[in-house]
Amino acid sequence: MNATDPQSDRSRWFALAILCTGALMIILDGSIVTVALPAIQRDLGFSPADLTWTVNAYMIAFGGLLLLAGRLGDLLGRKRVFVAGIALFTAASLLCGLAAEPWMLIAARFLQGVGGALASAVGLGMIVTLFTDAKERAKAIGAFAFTGATGASLGQVLGGVLTDALSWHWIFFINLPIGLATVLLALRVLPGDRGVGLAAGADVAGALLVTSGLMLGVYTIVETESHGWVSGRTLGSAAVAAALLAGFVLRQARAAAPLLPLRVFRSRTVAGANAVQLLVISGMFAFQIVVALYMQQVLGYGAAETGLAMLPAALTIGITSLLISARLVARFGERSVLLAGLVLLALALALLIRIPRDPAEVSYATHLLPTMLLISGGGLVLPSMTALGMSGARQDDAGVVSGLFNTGQQIGGALGVAVLTTLAAGRTESLAAAGEGRDAALTGGFQLAFGIGAALVAAAAVLTLVVLRPRTAGGPQSPDGGTAAGGGVQKAGAQGAGAEGAGARSAGAEGAGAAPGASAATAATPAAPPRPAADRRRTRRPVPATTPR
Image (tube, rainbow, N blue to C red; front, side, top):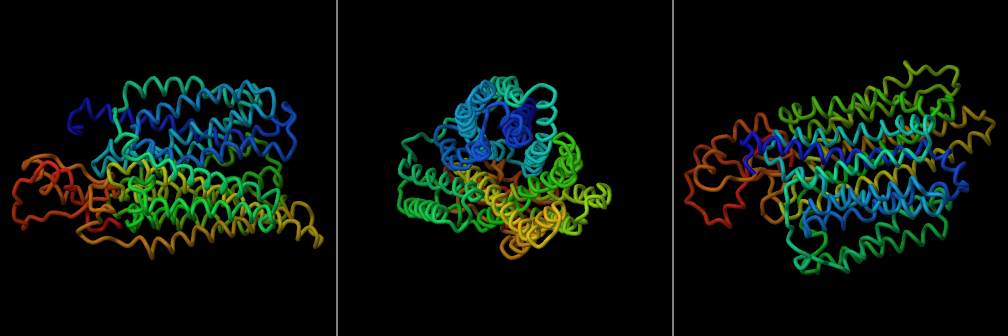
């Protein structure tokens, strides 16, 4: 696709808008349900234990199928998988809204998770193939990160308003017009890709191992709230999940056409960014849940009021990711921007440790608003971390690397919420047993959760310093030496090669660091003879020397 063609350029940005709309609908649904749970429980007669499955069923399907969905995008075509995912998610939303029994809602939520996994797993892969220029890619990933960051917070506000003004059914019905419009526009606008075909990589055994292992792992995590971390049931389920995932790794090492080529982990950047993400998401996703619980259980905020109190965080993240992050990445590189964002996030969580235990002494402007503003660091972390996570993917691995990255988000979120809420509850019980009042005991538990969250983010900063080193002028290569999906697409012919070499300095100054790139040409390098077409496809765009590897 020729990025210089105005019509083509408009189509690419329109395609990005469609991908962001689909992602927004899925992300909103993840948070919009949480504030409607009391109304759902009253209407459908859920028991307290079964009510959590309206969330867990979605999370298990979503987190368990992301990796498989990403590989299906590579095999069947990412457009086809995206459209199928949005269509299934929309149909399942209708079933959720019409549910008259608890089992009906849980089953429909599971189907929503399947559709959400299909659509989400291929989104990043489509973005890095649509936007091959480093500067444009940084803007596109910033917009995608903006969608995710604001969607989670706005979902709580929208869920409260819809539930209070209409009914809980409308938190699902609202997806119908959005989903239908997204499917119709995606069919017209998104570029078609045929994929390499099922025969090229239908690793059925690997798919069964990883899907069952991830689903059981997520199930084990979410069930720790009921059974504890050291119960026989939890330990047994964890052991089986670990065995399934270990079998998957062995299968991938030996399979001729693996579901997850282990070569992607040879990229220090991809492996490091996924590890950093696991720590960050564990701390920050848990923060969203825990701070909302604190506002409602200790400060007495309602559902809509809680969402509005968190709105400054959503706005600052959105502004930072959409308007600022790309420029900073272009100037300083993803690693530096990621570190700056992690420092802001760690400080934001650490400030909450000092909240007074007497709610009468708590002022939103003094004790909560500074944290909501410092959470803007997420607008720096999400785009740069996403760009790094996708940077080492080859063109034909973009879908599975996107699925891997999204899987890490779901596992990190589930693990963070389970661990932090469990530890907070234990701390609250010990303080209450020691004679502390209800509000003081709850606040003490939440303070512990905030402190652990800050430590997780700080650990992510240390890992970034140690693992994600600034790369040399040559830049990294994709795991097997092929063209990276996030890197520039070299123009065919001598003229295209010359233009790329001449523009190296400009691309380095203005392009955002999502380019995984390859070796940078210099003016002193003699002109190489024309290469065959097969070799020409492996040529890479020059990248700045300061971009992290």
